[in-house]
Image 1 (tube, rainbow, N blue to C red):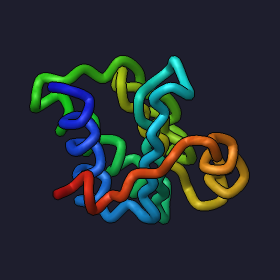
Image 2 (cartoon, rainbow, N blue to C red):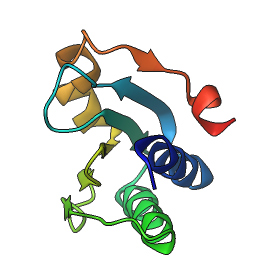
Image 3 (cartoon, rainbow, N blue to C red):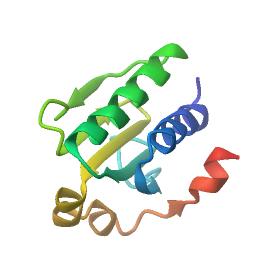
Image 4 (cartoon, one colour):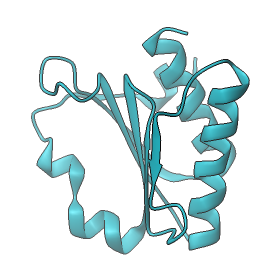
Length: 117
């Protein structure tokens, strides 16, 4: 699975679980960590965990590898490292506090609709 296909799987999994304000940042040339960051939020710890679980399950169903998942038990900020794609699933307060979109302000955002099409 290439990084574009992986990104699409992750975005769709988040969208399927009603994640809010999904933002995809193109990190190519800006970060050695990943090509894409996905940032979204859920309304409760249970929803955040459900979004993270859906991402993990869908990626693994298609033969992808979850390199690391952190924060799942707390359900405030779950980080899922998929190699070329890193997903950050926040509760609203944590997302506002850490404001990754501003931190990585040089990274162009990618339309979620374009990813899903």
